[in-house]
Image (cartoon, rainbow, N blue to C red):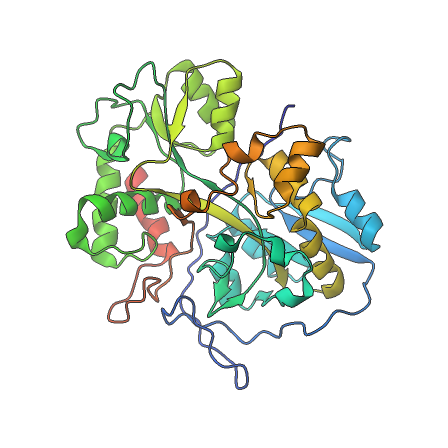
Length: 403
């Protein structure tokens, strides 16, 4: 079966800093003990009558209603089951999602980790009462209560799915087979001019992860928590890599073509791109290196200005349930969050190997990933004696890296 996988973009250019809590009753909510405070946005205590409609803001491929392909539709079954008529608007960057949700015109948003803390800090999304979600218990435990989707133990959404940023290479050219990210960051890489990194400021975290393992004296404990010196060191790694890059990629089709043509032979990629290249019978392999990797885990969040909160909860429960989660994760090309979704995929899509390919239930594998998380000034590694750099700093640095 052919998948119409869409690109998960991870671009953003808006500063997120620690926001003072305006609560006089709910108390401070702190992310990971780092001092990041969330505004006191009310959380639903119970559900009421469904309002009859819901406005969905989504990455392409997360809420398909048959418009793009009549055979690809999991929104209509939701409407039929709940009576909530859905309107769907797609966005192509996290920055666009943040801007759109602020308008108050949308009830729910599928947010990547480079947007979630900005939405929480801005008071743009509400804490989610997971007791009101019948399928929350079936969500894999390693996707719950994480620094990118919760604050002080309070969840702010329903996990959608996850994936790893893999070290991908052409085995006919790259010999011996690589085992470490040093193969793309080493200043003396034999693959100069053939290396393809991901085109986003969040890629700085990949260099920081490399430094965590190769230069422990820097004291990096979390690749998204970098003080000024640590950021400068990561930038130096990437400026050196710049002279060895074939192209920075953000369009998955272009990266697929570059690997197939030989213009690129090694770099960061995603499992579904590897699958596409393999389907074309071109040489390709991908590994999770010894030192682990960055990755993504997206979360469905409810707008604090939602006009249809009951239908919003209904959508979160449906898309996090086995059928909705299976359909969206399979179409998109990622590991589903719901533990029962793999059985649905094996039965409905006749693809028993899908979840093994994407390591859906492999918690040990998942623990090797540092999921995209928005860098904030309150250090996410718990340090309080220094300010960390923000996404705005990373964006400025990325512009300097690329020249």
